[in-house]
Every structure is written in structure tokens, then in C-alpha cells.
Image (cartoon, rainbow, N blue to C red; front, top):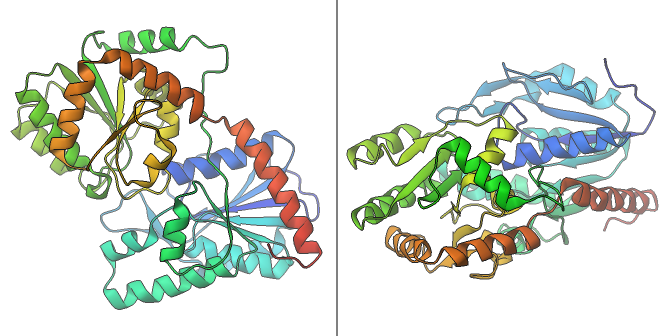
Length: 399
């Protein structure tokens, strides 16, 4: 049944993708929507149309015309300019506040809705958009889009970032607006009284992994920018060194076929498992719990949600020095940092950690204690910040 709407009471969440497309940002928006709805708020999600649209009975949703993005399936690019109904819906829904999680097509709709209803616009910068644009557009179009991105964030009532170090990216893009750090949470946390050791043992049993075998995990887009080829090269090196390991990949992307070919060519078929897109959160929780180490050599990501998800299951991450993600990590306390995002550095680190399993267990405990925040905890902060922004907007104060 549709959610009953109360005038000027709707929390608008805008993003260029939403489940069934799965990534850190879509899961963040889904958790925002689910939490707000579960706590009595009226929510409306605006996102591009997708052919496999699951039902969302707890909140209102409007999708707009979109087409597949070449070589980036299942992502789609939205075209609101050719969809008159979405503009009508943006005018009809009585928004109280509008939160854009992307500056592109959904961001333009969010800015329009905020202006039309005279309500504040919150804009979160999640991704390294310049890197994304360079991958698919000629240089003159990249600069044109970056100008639009700068204007979008500079004109927002509030700019949020998921981690302090993301401010470097913000300033690099020429965005001058003040920023506020609002972290992401995890819906995988087992709870304060949970026996994580027992959960990890049971997850390994169900996955068929022996206690002695070093179990590694990567969750995310299978694209070169995430460092997936570095992982494969490192696995080849540790295999030659005689390491007993098992590697699990969850996700998909344009490099997935090449990754599988390289695994076969290296003779690693028995040690490397490809799970594809894991849509079940329970299954993903088991993968995180079964892993000894979450391996993530990406220099591309701003504040990857997957590192916090792994931490919720007491699985420490292995990250490259200088990455944004490593900012929240102290080496050997709540994770591990390697000197460079290259195969030799990662291979040496894996061999050393296999010989010191107690260090891995300790870092997993540290990760769970320091990096894992529940969505309850995060969203209580979000709602307080929303109310402050609404009050400031009402009194004519932008920041």
C-alpha cells in the first residue's frame, strides 16, 4: 500500500542508482530510506528506472527514464529531461528536506525539488567523479561536467562527506563549501552480545573452508580501478610460494571476464571462487565472517562501505598506504596497511599475515570495535543534522 503523506513532511532521497543495482552508495541510500520509514518518517526515493525493480512498500519511490550504460551493466543513465512525469512528481511530493547522493541526473532533480519547495538541499560526495568521467568522456566533456559538479555542491545548503580525508577530493575539485563528516553504517553487525568467533567458525563450516587455510575476500565492482588485477597477480605470487589460501570475489563489472580468464591461465581455479552479485545480505554476511582478511587494494574509493562491513564481522582489511580508506586505520591495530598497491607488496603482506594469525585475529577485534557503526547509530546523527539544517534554512542561514 502507498505510504500516506503528510504536507511538508517527506524526506527526499535522490541517487542515480538503487537496488537491484548494488554498490556502497545504493546500499547507503537504501539504509537511509529503510531506517527513516521504520521510524515513522515519510520517505520518497527518486532514482532512474530499472527493468528489475523490487517492491518497496515502506516508502514512496519514483523512477524516471533511463538507458543502460555501455560496459557498466547493471548501471543505467537517467534522462529526466525526456520524462515529464518525474518533474511533476518532484513538484507534487511535499518535501521537507532533499538529500542528493549523486550530482548527476538525480542531483539535478534534487536541486529542482529543493528550489521549487524552498527546502534545504543536502549533498553527499561519495565518489571520485573525475576518475569516473575520465574513463568514459573526452577531456572537454570531463571539464564541462566538473564545472557542473562544482556548482552543484557549492550551491547546496550542506555538503556531507563519509570520511574526513574525502575533503582532499572536495578541494581538488574546486568545491569551496564547508563540509561535514557523516559516516556510513553497516547493516551486518551481529549485535553487542554476539559471539563473533562462533559466527566466524560456523560461516567457514558452511563455506567448506578449513581452519588452517587463509581465506581472503573482495567485495565490490570487478573493475581495474578497484585493484582487482593487483589481487590476481599477488595470488599468483603467493601460490608459487606455497601459501594454502582460498580467495572469494563477490560482485561483477567490466573486468569480470578477464579476471576469470587470468585465474584459469594461472591455474588458480581451485583456489579462487567467483560468486557474482550477492544480493542476499545473509549470504554476504557469511562471506565476510568466513574471511580472515578483506583484501582491497583500491586507490579509487573515497570511503568504501565494504571496509566497515568487513569490520562488523571482525574481518580486518588489507589496504594500501595513501588510500582514503586507510585514513581510519592504524596498522596492526584495526587492519593492515601495505606500502604500495602492487602485487609484490600484497603478496609479501599475505605471506607474513599467514605466519601470524594471532595478529589477524587481534586486528579483526580492533576493526569491529573501532570501524563498525550500526545504521541505528548513524541515522540518529543524520536526523539530528537534518533538523538543524531545516532550522537554519528556515532562518535564512545556509551552513
